[in-house]
Image 1: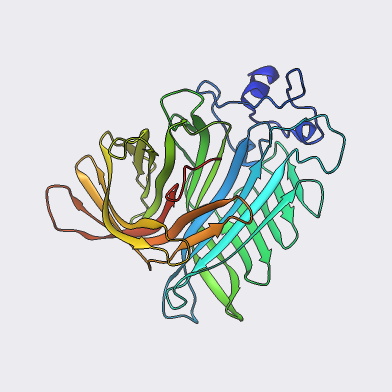
Image 2 (image 1 turned 60 degrees about the vertical axis):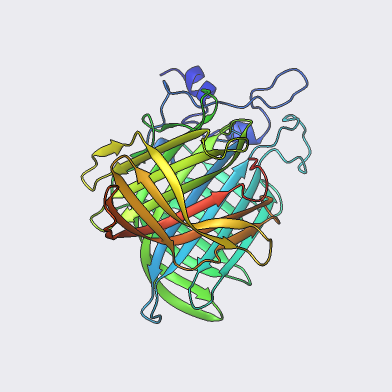
Length: 375
């Protein structure tokens, strides 16, 4: 593959030149974003790193954890975001926001009854914020008190030290990376540009420590990690999305989403769902439906969320029950969003039967329930 093709798709390049202001630009020096291309799929380990030629990117960790000092399981969510604003990319000022970095972290502990979370936003290259990436699967994102980095090929390290939360976690791959959609090219709408590059690392083994409520706990668990980058993604009529990343007890991984239509609640803009077995075989579903089982209304924001849902996939059904209802995350101080990101238990059964049995657990994410979601 020629370098110019890689540049067009924003794949496989360290792109440090992007951070210094030499990205593709049109007259007026406005940014021209790279777009996902099904004929130029991502590859690993090359594409664990950053892709600053794209508008939006995130490294998303969601998982269930235990501690020998607690009698209950709890959820953990960590997300590092990168955003490339549409600004003059040749502006030499160190204050020009050519790349913005954000991060969220939250712990969902039933005994607390709501999320303990924190967030941060910085310009890359200033205020202690650093974005480093190379072709050799090396990623290093730093902001004051926050760091995410890769190590030794299949390992990741996350350190967070804030007044609200402290985490020191080591993550390791246990399964082959899952290239979502068409070899890592994931459609999110009817138009080609309404898509992303999407890589999942399911069942990541994790251990370390978490300090919460003034106590440092030894913890262990498993993370679902999504690395996704794009430039458009959502159709103009998209309201938001419901997404799940679920771990089965037998090593299965289930990913499903619907992009909701603001004008027609009964007909989503786009849906997709796939189930991967522990041996790597994948089943893609044709019929996908999210049915609401229970609503919960936030007393802080007044937003109604369908916190319990029944996911119908062809002949199978998966019932999602929240670890507890109040898992709303207020990220208005960083990404400007309100959303529900929660740990859920999962039961499964046949669509034609009311009988279900425990299947696994994971996370449910819901956006756009207050206003149309914008990336």
